[in-house]
Image (tube, rainbow, N blue to C red):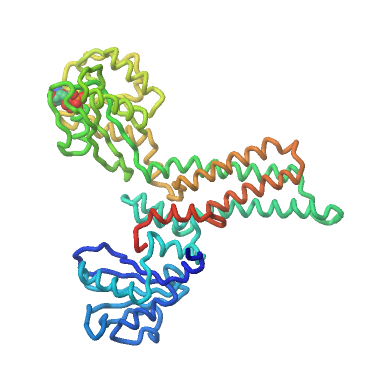
Length: 457
Ligand SMILES: Nc1nc2c(ncn2[C@@H]2O[C@H](COP(=O)(O)OP(=O)(O)OP(=O)(O)O)[C@@H](O)[C@H]2O)c(=O)[nH]1
Ligand SMILES: [Mg+2]
């Protein structure tokens, strides 16, 4: 098996664009031999002599045969994506041409890059920390403007700075404690008191708590709001889905039990993605297929970030309605009373009036009010004005939560624990924060992270 160092010494190649018919394809090569390997195939200027960061016109030629007309960019280390010498061949887009050039490069000493290997090298070469690497993945996967904003903040190092600042406070404290422990005989050194530690650990704890609390906003932006439309059969769930999506996606009929399986679609409200799921009407049934659908509805009711609980304005509350109201009372639930065009037979006096919206899905009546209710319930207006400096990554948040618990432990045991034990605890927090940044890491974590990237990134 190759050693880590050998793997890093390989010159790697990959397609940076999708394989298919396109205007151009970009083949990316990185590593110590990249310029030489391409130069041997290139008819045009001597690429080993051209200036760094230049674009060079010429041809890829093998055994005298012109393979393609290309533009080749030459970028010498260290100011490149990977931190290594990098060449990018812009060839004509198309499967035949691209594959041929890739194939030649593989026979001339390049190795096919694994997923995310370019970014992995960028990390290992110290150009970015692990939070920034994870932000690159988020940037590529971002679908909305807000997701993009969070990701670019992360890539710019703003999220890393929040963690670095915490570590800075800790390292100052730890080094002061160490001096106290190691040189107790010196009289002129500053003596760290428990009060000093308390002040600092309070700040650390508070800051971590704040980051974690705000991450909820970030997660909403990143993952969207999973919204389940729940209710008895025939109350108008599918009609509501269609109104929200603005298209006739779900089948609507007056036959109760029309929707058997879930139907879903996405909309944006104030730039936040809502994944709206229409479900089978919940009722007792002997029909095997419908039963599966009803079970799915119940599961979704539990999992959803937001439940739109639909009731029929034209009917009295049934036991089934009351059961659903009870089941969703601790969730983010909006009670949506549909068929507002028909006579009011429902008695809502027992319900929390604050969370009720009246709609009529035959028209668009009430749909705007429903959207506004969602905006206020999730504070979406506030999110839009924010700086987008959120930590949304589950790995990073998991580690931060560990640090939160550890700092709470220190706070609680401050009076009873001796200085040297406290120092060990503070160091554990400092190290755990370090794993967020990738100051220390294990290879399994890196393999797992970079395997989520596309090839060529
Ligand atoms: N008068 C009136 N009828 C409505 C309204 N919304 C829906 N309907 C009618 O109610 C019936 C049921 O609508 P659906 O949207 O299929 O109801 P559902 O809740 O999805 O029903 P299931 O899929 O069976 O659970 C249809 O005939 C709709 O046209 C409304 O606001 N007013
Ligand atoms: Mg339906």
